[in-house]
Image 1 (cartoon, rainbow, N blue to C red):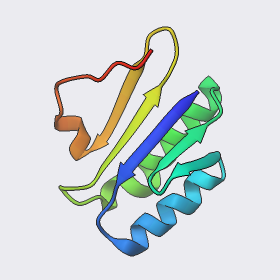
Image 2 (cartoon, one colour):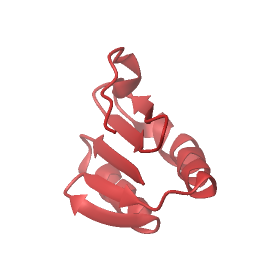
Image 3 (cartoon, rainbow, N blue to C red):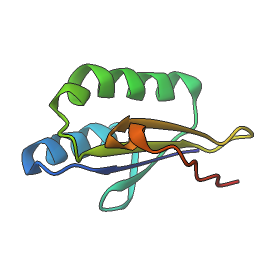
Image 4 (tube, rainbow, N blue to C red):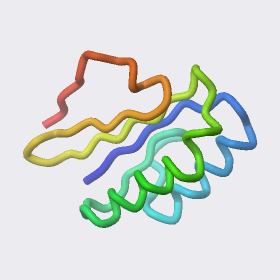
Length: 90
């Protein structure tokens, strides 16, 4: 399973991002989504975020992807890249 959460300040960008995520998974909370665990889907989501959204993020925006697997990888975009401490959920 992949858990993706975000904090995006701009309303219009946040709405577009939310609609984008609904194509891949389901909303758990306002800014928390569950996405089916597939390496192909994870790669597609990451590419789309980098291609369509990352350049539009403000300094305070962040997207966190929790790839819940044996390795419990955390992939960070936006301000979340600056965080050095990892939260491990296993």
